Image (tube, rainbow, N blue to C red):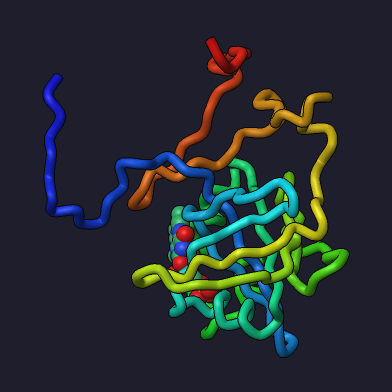
Length: 188
Ligand SMILES: Cc1cc2nc3c(=O)[nH]c(=O)nc-3n(C[C@H](O)[C@H](O)[C@H](O)COP(=O)(O)O)c2cc1C
């Protein structure tokens, strides 16, 4: 099959699927949450995590004030919640109250942890830098919350117990199935 090549990049989405996560922050007694697909681990030592956030987001404003944030991983069954969180403005409403999002207390930061999350990182802001129209926000992971029972003894997500929330672009979501899990040793 012949690949199409274009220099008209547009709203590129060829790299999807990506895990959709919920970024949380709190400041001035206000909590907010936004959905993010553009995030990544960066370093193991120290443990660094990055997320690309538009400066227009209220969550970003709270992160710049509090200097910390949370990254919450929710299951596929909560895709509708991710769409609601990612389609509403924290400047206009308390999303936690309006969307009935239950939160748990963070341990080190001020960022609320979602009760629906099977895993979450608490991050302390270490750097933020503008790249084009987004800010690459980097945090050091200072606490990890996770449901031990949905991970195997090797700390691999058990796809029989939890279905990760994958984002395909636009308004499309998917998940992955246990049948596709393969153990393949790296190298030749
Ligand atoms: C699936 C999905 C993924 C998104 N990924 C990002 C992202 O990576 N970075 C970003 O700045 N906004 C992203 N958004 C948009 C924000 O979640 C959205 O603008 C949100 O309403 C911001 O809320 P806030 O203003 O209360 O912070 C995404 C939205 C959805 C639905």
